[in-house]
Image (cartoon, rainbow, N blue to C red):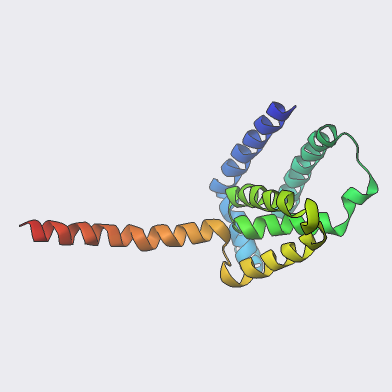
Length: 171
């Protein structure tokens, strides 16, 4: 079952990557950024929103169908607001606007949840989750992937300059 879940995650990732990188995905980005302008350009915004909402509902249905056998039982507490808030925090921690960000954020937050919900730290998990959200919102607005991109950009530019300076010294 775990292998099937991983395969479905990869297939869903590829499907989402195809949608996002297509012309249709570019229209969705335009709708997100300036809905009225996109409507003015002649696109049927409601149609595009309906299609992407239906796609996301199908993905959520498959995820739910795979979730229940993994945990063994489903009960009303699974629909508590805390679980929805936790999913939003996954996206914030991993990186907004990216496909990989939510998965990375889920791994990081669930690892922290494993640490904080055992032993004497269990009572402080929700405080830690809230603090993590505030920290990410204020210090890392683009999440872990945004920080990684900034580091790559900063040190990626400095590396050629440093190697040029070393090459100049060698002459």
